Length: 236
Picture 1 (cartoon, one colour):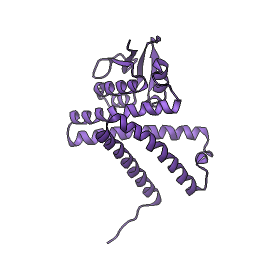
Picture 2 (cartoon, helix red, strand yellow):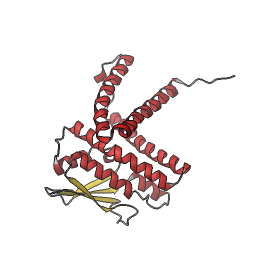
Picture 3 (tube, helix red, strand yellow):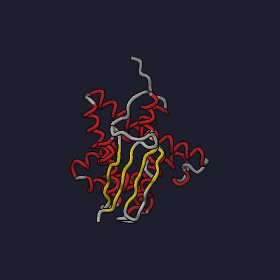
Picture 4 (cartoon, helix red, strand yellow):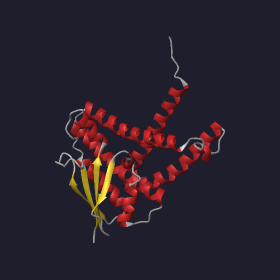
């Protein structure tokens, strides 16, 4: 029997794949067993500890201090690495959707997708608050800052309009997913249900007073200058 062993690069790729899956399964099952709030608290503790451990182990393996792991990489390459990882995140979302849709149907895939966003958006908001040291209930300014460090903030084009002390409109002027479909001659992907789940959960985690209203999102008709638009308001 001939057994072909994986190359070192293939082995590392497989390790990353299984590490990511295991971490995600712990988070998903924690949500199921404990509820979202407690699971996000646990993720904060586990995630902080895990990435400190990971940095230390990689540093020792490479003979570097953890803080020096990427110190020799210039800013342009760091930016490219960041963009590659963010676009890979988007690709992972897409291939999972397609896999579920292929096994079942679009309705089921959308249900799974919306459920994932109901958990990921609050996590992403909490990470933004931690990264930026945002206060609890920081209002519109905190929301704007947090939206600016999301994964999508680096992948799509967007803008803020009609800002007041208690409200702001956020518009996605270019969306990678919809642009790709347009290039293929396909209709917009009907992402409104997922968008409502995504933006509502994100805003609420930033400031519990924030409410989200969908101005328009596919399958809604929209002008060429934007793909989806959302109004955030602080409830009186």
